[in-house]
Amino acid sequence: MSGLSAFLILFSLVTFVVGQLFLKRGMEASACGWRTRRFIFSFGTGIVSMTISFFLTVGLLRHLDLSYLYPFQGLTVIIITLLAGFSLRETLTMQLTIGSLLITAGVVLVSLS
Amino acid sequence: MWQLWRGFLNPRFQIFFGAVVVTASELFLKRGATATAGSAESWGWTGLASLRSPFVWVGIALVIVSLLSWLYVLKHLPLSIAFPLSNVVHVFVPIASWFFLGEVISSRRWCGIALVLIGLIVVAKPFAKIEERL
Image (cartoon, rainbow over all chains, first blue to last red; front, side, top):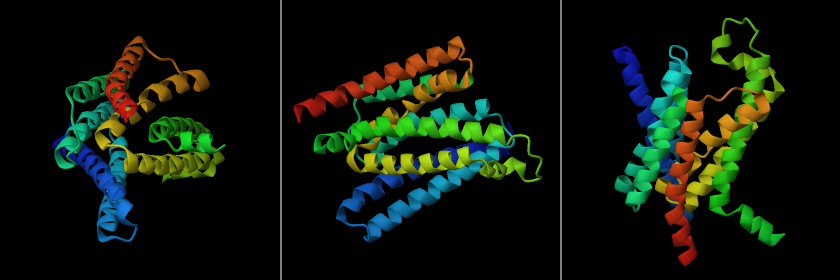
């Protein structure tokens, strides 16, 4: 894996995670109305971030095997769970963390086979 | 009828519904992509050639439905619970590929599916208890 591939894989993961976090913020903000600045900013950032991630993934798939790329995406389960706890201040229990780790391991195993 | 609609709008059901819709979209996209795989356009690598297949359009419509369902889930459930649970799709897609497309699932993949299932149960159990108390 070249340095550029590693950077693009990392960037696609970061944009996916950021996209999910902003979409969550946006949907929470939608309770106060669809025209609020907070909703428009969060929802817009989420959609743009997810779109960048999508096209980066498609671009990476032109050069890398799906079976090689997909396990990295499995890592988003545990990353999003932990970041939802830290940045969105959601309650993280030990059981939730262990469950997320098991799902991550399962997704990676499914992708590798 | 009202009860049925309320059940459909339950965020936990929407996670399940979204996963089923994503699985269906993957099957349609795969079928459409396979049907147009022979085309030799210079821009074939973009996947745009697959847009000639009606199966791909059905797949795209289902992707939009699943996105709307996911946004509804995000509005009502914590991301730290909803996102791990949405990974039930990694159980549905291989099983659907095996059942509908006749693809072979290796023993390692079955082990992965079992791990995902155990993880889902571990995540969902305390969540169910909290809802019971409410």
